[in-house]
Length: 379
Image (cartoon, rainbow, N blue to C red; front, side, top):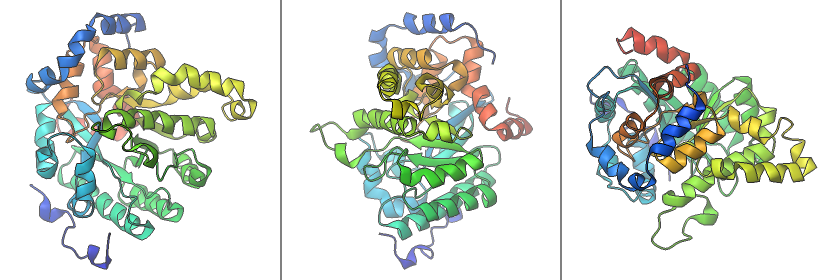
């Protein structure tokens, strides 16, 4: 619980600093098909050990899925953070901005747009969530200043708190100059298309904001299978729930100026897209909220490939959307950046597709990064 002493707890941030062109889709899918499915099971281990071919060159990747663990966040959410991941916790407990930059340099990442992982800020009540979001956003904004060109910021919002979210949008985008906002896929068994969240999306649409949505573990489904962490399966399904919620409730069509990014190749949504479309078509009242059709809305979204470079995930994603909608994401520090970086480099993409996913698609979303990274000698 965040108490009155939170503002003066000495964890402000600086004390802890160390210091498109696309080739044919047929060629793209052929490359996917040529990667043997059996190799996917051992790929992560190999990728984590194999140096990235871009690691020794000037970094150029734009990483849109890059988590930070600010001291205020660890102070108030440490146990929740550690409980979500079944991986080695040492990378989480030893996180600092300097170590993040070191990881970026090793894996060809020029700039990382930072966001909080789970549980986000929505726990402990609205007052605590507002305070924690503000402290974490200010910490991330200071990282942007302290490491010029290396970081961007998806600002955390306490979404169920409408007034608090609207205030934080104004502060984050106008004062902190955040690159967008970061949400999670569900809040207290409510998904983002819920009508109660519409005023927040209305404001984000007015600002033509980028909205990064990270999967969550909904209250309904946290411990369905003994011994299986929810992040293994539920993250992917809750991403699909979030997309479906925004789709069938008309959020995508009513707020077309928002650029949405979804994690992990869209979770299970690429596999479920046809079923979602058939469902919408059977119900006129829902179809009226999706006047351009399901496929149109899904193809507008952006999807990162964090921890998703395998034949099944990539085949499903590239059958759903064209290459310009696909972004690089690392999921660091929960997953070593080399897992996705080396996986992408060795996946068999054409040079144009690889450059698009690694960098150019991100530059189109965040034009300032093209100027910033070039100004510090990153190409």
